[in-house]
Length: 218
Image (cartoon, rainbow, N blue to C red; front, side):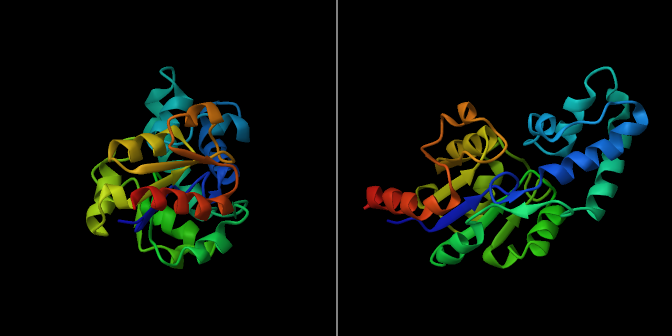
């Protein structure tokens, strides 16, 4: 047995999108009197999808504005997907090396937005399947989207590896019985990554870790 399938988170793992998310949030929040968020403040809220993100920012006091803020956010974000977004170092060249694996994206961002970012940043062609928050009947930290990809791409949990920057990615992978690899350069502090099976500081360290994982399956 060997590793056949790689499951990747998107934001904070392959691409740095936090400034565009922050700008879109601020566009939607300013009309209701919420002070502009900084990039670092936004990082504390991201990871569970746009609805959860907005609910966290609004709190109980302004939760009645959720749907309006969400509509404004999505409208603005759709038009400003990659104004300031970029691919993390070593991602493209490493993905190009991983030609012998099936590869999928599992994002808590909506599928059409995930596809848009991947297309604009010239990453879409590396992947066999794109799963967004609205693709499968569940999203991270649930293991539902992981199991969805395993079924679609015909791989067993033992043959797959989940790579992400947050505890939501790790929890989703572990829940499905998949080996997990956390990256430390993303949006979550390293203390949230302690449950990962492996931790890497640079994306180009991934092939060596995959070799180690595969060697243990023999």
